[in-house]
Length: 158
Image (cartoon, rainbow, N blue to C red; front, side, top):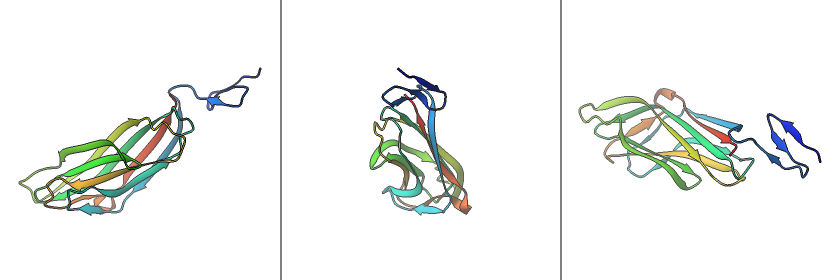
């Protein structure tokens, strides 16, 4: 019986299967988006912030880290965000991001989303962020002045 120990790849068994040590980061995918995108609707629309990962193991967790920069709103509204795996909602941020009814334009900097997902697959998996104007009365924008928003996917061995 052969047993190969490799700190980067986990443990290889005689049948050539590899089992990664729990907690190890197996791969990292990062994508950046810097095109100003806007919405005046309460219907969620894609932001352009998206990335795909193909997990090595169906038992792996995917840590999703999103930083949405350059947010701005006009008039009396606020931004809402949701994180999706494929078409499935996995995280929703419906708080009044940047809401201030006394100011007509309000740059609010950034919003972040952190989510530990269990997709239970070894197929390519896409994560994306959508947004909407909460009050459905005025415009919200991201990546204002070409600021960069990012999404990072980390496969973690379970």
